[in-house]
Image (tube, rainbow, N blue to C red; front, top):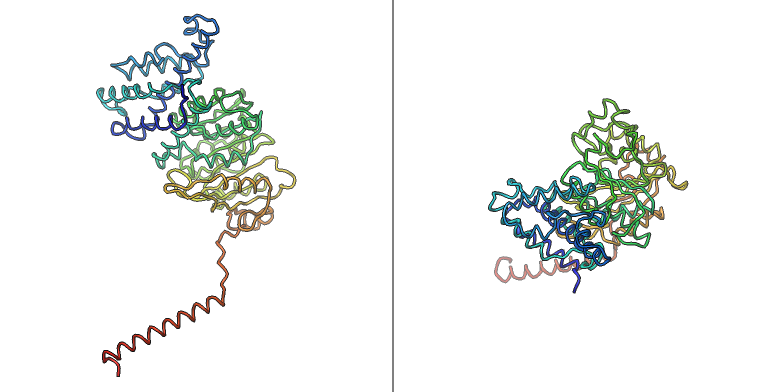
Length: 508
């Protein structure tokens, strides 16, 4: 029997959006498509495990009822064979099925229950709700999502990533809140180069893409694929409950069931803590926090920095209406003594004065900045502004101490109609320059901290690299020849015009 290919699965999932189109708001598509995909995958894998147990000699009764025989146990009401039979009160039955699955699997707590299949505000009145849900059940019934039916082990994870990308594009500005374009994620992971046995954190993890790419990088080093056991610890935190649920599903579909993803506001209520209530520390921290967040929590942390801030804001509390360096300082505080951080930031953090300026000066004097990379414009959903990647290192190599590498990568892009992307060649050029710590005219330059101090600790890339396009040299001889030809043509035209005017009697 032919296996399900990536294109077939992508097309099937995209057609599920056609069922929802015109019936519910497009911003809610992802909630229900993700929910049905997850339910179908859980059920198909459960049935596959039952067949494997029976082949090994277990009775069907034991195979269906013993949770110890399954990666995730699916109670009877959550199995697709039962879901297919639903004809009335479908939303209510689906909600109860999700609750039963969560009760049987503590690691899924809060993931499926977040998908309200009985919501009138999203799915409309009872008639519309029943119609949409029954069509989706029938549509997903055509898919077999058991392991043996998939053409590649990470097919479900890849499909989930693709869905997240589609819906981020559709959501515009809001899409940027939960999704970072995969090429940007890949660039930062390559720069951080996480290794097996490392602890990795994303304190604003969105849909989990940065943690998954980090795991994929480690898996490649170990000669494995996602879905196989990988020697890496993944932690994250996400404020938006709907996005938190997406992240949990995303990680589970990639086989990363041991990842710890906490709910809550990272600044006001950090949840990645040890048993004594102290911040956990990591080998690598990676993030794309919300840009220039207003009301980020300055009042909550400035009243008692030591207690409320977990000693995070040692370089200063950022302005109330500009939270960028609050997230950066949180990330630095969660690095271990050899830790490295990669974070996407707006360019303003490089040159803003006042509070941000004092924080930046303090971090530079502490020699935390290793590299500053200016990205092209129009890479992110909902915004055309260019961003920058900061690499912060608590254990810089001896030859890198007291220096910062600037990389002007604003021209490293592949133009697309809706938004630009970083191509593989663009990523490789940036990563090679960083790893080699090399200088290249108009692209990269190593700058001493002394020079940065002379510039009042301003890190604007154009202060250290000539970012203006060079003017093409002028070939004087060729330009004079062109001028002479133009003059001859002009003289010829004047002569012809005078001749015509004389012929017509206007010139004596």
